[in-house]
Amino acid sequence: MVRIHVGPQNLNYLRLRFFYAFFIVLFSMDICCYILFSPKLKRFYTGACQENLIERIMKHNEHTYGKDKYTSATNDWELFLKIDVTNYAHAIRLERKIKTRKTQNIFVIWLNIMS
Image 1 (cartoon, rainbow, N blue to C red):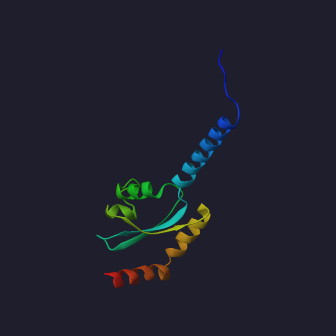
Image 2: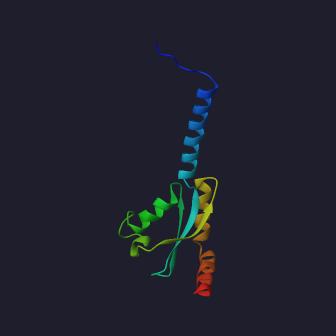
Image 3: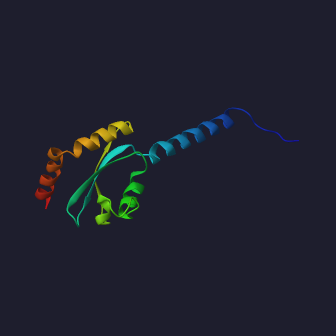
């Protein structure tokens, strides 16, 4: 004979498992706009991400995105700025805004001041 306990203890365990899984999914995916900086090139790279940002930076440094891409010139990209957003469309809009000349010049001026 097999006895199964069905009640508050089992239900609380299931709730805990659900919230744990939800927490892992929520924080393993970063929806953000990010700016990387290369000390070797003294240049910035702006991108948008809807996956784990640390893995994304590692892919840039490992040249996963191809040898002809902007980030393949070096492998010392570091996170300069991360802007969390609510959805990927907003991250793309923000990335395009930052990539305009006027906004990029702000970061170059900041870099010159900090050097």
